[in-house]
Image 1 (tube, rainbow, N blue to C red):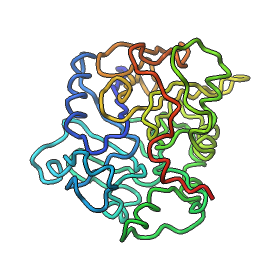
Image 2: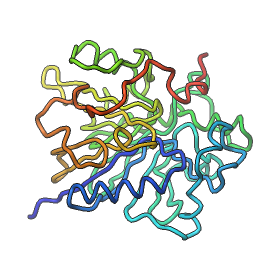
Image 3: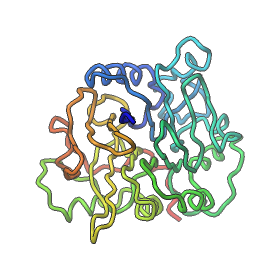
Image 4: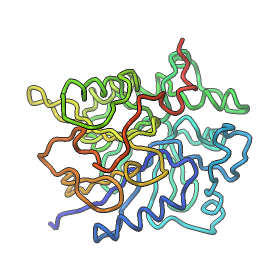
Length: 309
């Protein structure tokens, strides 16, 4: 049988910028000499019809709201885009589709938690961020700003729904796993970048990574590019983690992977087509683009939503 090959692109927090994502995918396909088969977005997609929608955060209303053109049929994605929820979404529109739906032709919401087979790959996912105070509380219908905010927090039953799946090719989460910055520090890999604070991320997505042991894990939320591996000790499977910047420029907002019969064989950042990783090679801070900006030790975007109690 012929080898099945796929070109998959992960995209960081889109925040309504659908047009540029389309342009980036065209550029990446041209650079790789083949079309992108599908796009996986790690949350904060913001599929709002209006930029000034009152359900959007005040700080987000200056962002574009280009989704209406796709929902109304004025434009159509050239390849399927699948996304999970972040902590900034049109939660009212998504509430009745907790197992996913097609919001517009070629634009799919995967749902709050689960696993799906996409283009032959097993893709697991968990939407939202961790807020301990709401972890065991039931999810309320987002009728106002406060309940919409709470819809951006994942719940315990959703986590358990994902915790038991296995044989995962890609795991999509919005918020980083806790401890990966310390892991990078412990590796002592030479880098000119200032590392983020060690407390970025949450223990729930870390437990998912350690339990599911996916081949790759893609994250967003903190608007920084990051590369680290987990596992490998005593023959344990290796999980390679790529954290993506927001979609302002593609250098670290896009991470692509090529698969051959479900095996990842090479990957790279941005849309130049340049390979940053090949099967068998290490995946760490040196895998990040050399031209990328230094990472500041700043509070991750969206952390103002975090419930600390």
